[in-house]
Length: 624
Image (cartoon, rainbow, N blue to C red; front, side, top):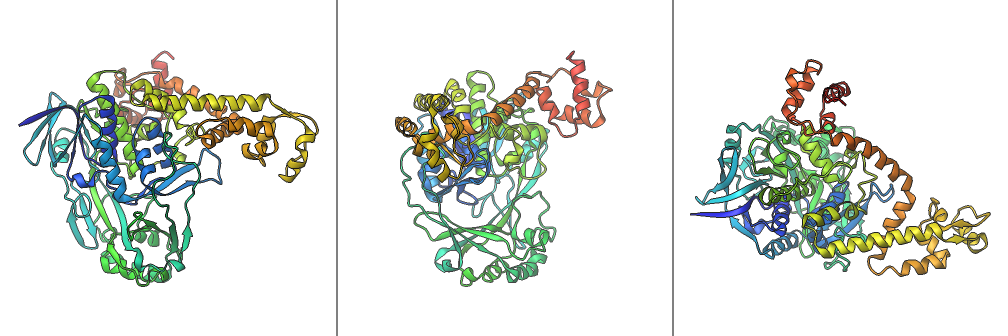
């Protein structure tokens, strides 16, 4: 028995869901294969979306017509804009989600797409003919045929979990691992490796003394993830709570180190340096007497809490004993302990920028299979893989985002150019053009591209046009409208800024560090009346206009730098050189250029080990 589809997506985590939704909404016939239909879009670790740089990625996913931002807004139980004390390039949205409602909403979203079908099963083998994937075989013995296949298998490939000396096969707690695909791909010449990640204990909130914690309240302003949603948050908004470890906690953890899989040789794979386990923290930062923890609610109507900062694979009894040394948790009860998990990944330098593998045509990888970590990083890869898989089936130019266009572009370029030596997580510091890649303007950067592609719909495009027109109107008004000293000086003194000695344009007041659009509107009635005319999303539009006004010089300078670099992006070199035959290249450059086979001179320049002199050699050979 066989079934025929345009695209098969293997795995229904965050990468698989956005890959399947995007390709189906573009018009492809999709089969989404998952081992458990009740765990679609499961939040395997913390019940949160966004954060530093990750929040920008979610806004980009939404701007492109993806679903993660919409689902998060519908299921959020807390929202915060992080890094408000810094410039707008660093502002990063983050939301706590109701874990169960998040999965339910994703399931409803997928079920509502007519040409998207779901099959519950495990894929054991890919069908490959003439170096092209043509389908999959499953554990139930079913053969599905397809023109393209996207693997979004998360931590399930040969997954192995650790709690102390106890080892369990599985892709997540109480869920089986997947076998067969890694071995097949390695047999076809792919390079594979092992990575490790972990998750903390889950706590019964009824056993917590919240009077001994500090409350962290969410924000209730206009900010959200989706550019489409102006409605109030549908769920009750809840607080998070902060608390700290202490020396007594650390003593108990030290006692358990001989039984820690991380330190007794049981785990040999690569773990995330920037998100260390609690046992790694007490070893690496032995001089620190305490570490901050966060109690995060798992849902609107549950007592389950996630203890952020206490990831661990120590024995159950050690985890419990250590937790009870924290005053707020002295009587703590838990739902399950933390655990570590090892899984297979494939170094992403084996991929093209479209996320199609170089070795097998029409086979795409997205998510943790590429060595990344995080829901947001996975979903963005899924979106790009879904778009490009659809293009492979129906025709069109490859969809690739540049580093100055999106954090998604930075992410994928880093993966396919530099590879990974630890689970990859996005940071603002990875983006050299982060002033251009703000959370407020992802729609302005990306929605037009998606609309031309056919993914962003007309409603989204019309909202974008309205926003751009309103921003232009505001900027034009403040550039042309004049104010006189006698009308504003008393108010300026009250705002602790220098009075005017002569008339100025409104923009000159807005540019002052002590003032913003709201304060200026409060003392200039004409501006207040003008802003009141904005029909929709007033706060969002005013914020975007103000950022453009205040940071115009920085934005313009970064655009000039990006344009210079982009000239090198247009110089194609794939297939033009036998690098090993070029004597002037360094030995390391020959090896790296041959292995990665970069598309352009710009990509070659970002490969670690390829020097500026090596790039000059290639430019000379090209006659540049």
